[in-house]
Image (cartoon, rainbow, N blue to C red; front, side, top):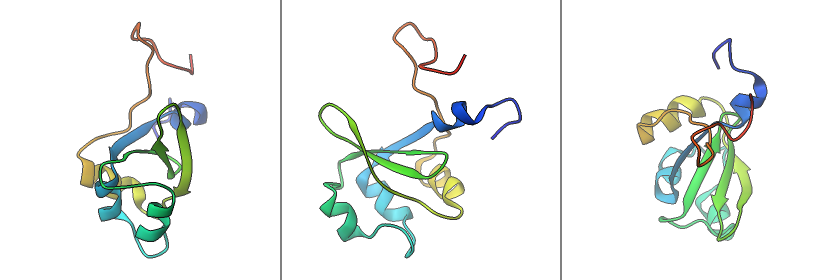
Length: 99
């Protein structure tokens, strides 16, 4: 996290991926394939991970917190997805939170 970022801004940053991508980056200490399937995660599920490692799955009308990543997950997530952390924005292009 850059020195200019507040912890609130960092909490609002995510990397999104498909369920099959998440399955590739999990370690033994993290939720298992069975745990994720039980939570409704499939290969094509839309997943997002925040900078604290919280895993959320997209439902029809909400995001559900289903587990967490441990250790060097930031590097694993960025390397596997090719993406960097991003904050949600409003339709007008402004940030969703955090002035």
